[in-house]
Image 1 (cartoon, rainbow, N blue to C red):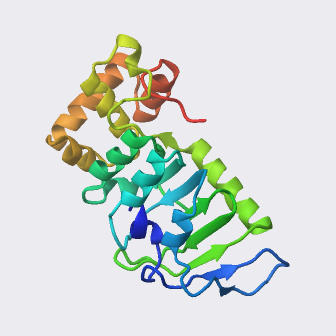
Image 2: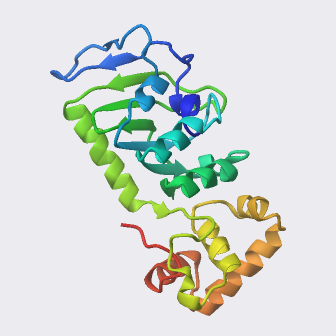
Length: 241
């Protein structure tokens, strides 16, 4: 899921070449990116910024490459699909990256798996429908296609929900919510199912329903959508945008 091979999002071994779509006219053929070019190589070259659409399946769950780059000042912005957040062990790994400085948001579904490095190169991977088999990957260089992919990322980012499961960066409820309630609200509004929230918190599903109803009552909300609106406009969570 995270750095290193986890972000390769392709059925290729580390060091295997990626097909590359170079800047050029529409229909330009994919070309080999080099004998040792791989998604990991692309990620390691990042010097300023990495943009991610993160979703399973994964080849690995090692996040050491990302953590090392965050420590060196490389900015990471990640949009997680809800399946990525529900993936076994995901919360621990995501939390490590958030603590290291990653900015994260979550959405119900992503259009593709994607990594954009320094706005100069992208690695794309199509979904296969098989939770255990990543799709084929292709590298995209500078040109109109890359510009469109960056615009797509920014649009999805703006429409996604800020993901902060420990409530570090939101309004903290402006004193209205305690730390446990802030964390619960962040999970509840992140797009996770009630069962997934229950697993992450180690509580029963009925406890999730009861806590959700309590927050809705305090906000005067009749639905979770209304609760999300109230939470964003009253500083309980960070608003999208």
